Length: 106
Image (cartoon, rainbow, N blue to C red):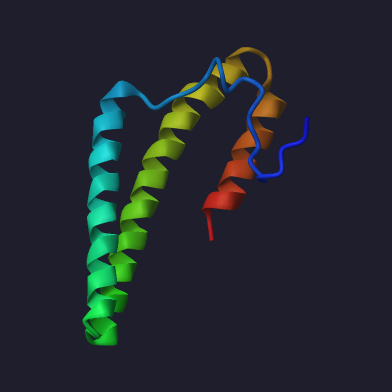
């Protein structure tokens, strides 16, 4: 079966899935804030606000999303990647981690 979405699912995704519970509420809160910021940017554009003000808000959204990404990356590395290495699949774990980093980093 072919996946046309360019989404790679790690073979161990069913075993190593999810966000640590302690981080989940924090991430959901951060993402809600980002949603609000994006709606605010939309309003700013509708209201023809001064471009530098809009760009400043866009930068804030990017920074907030980067922070969410870093939290998820740390969670994945400390959990799933470590577990996969301990299962004797270090090459697989490093290949996956490098693929994630290539997508995440500019």
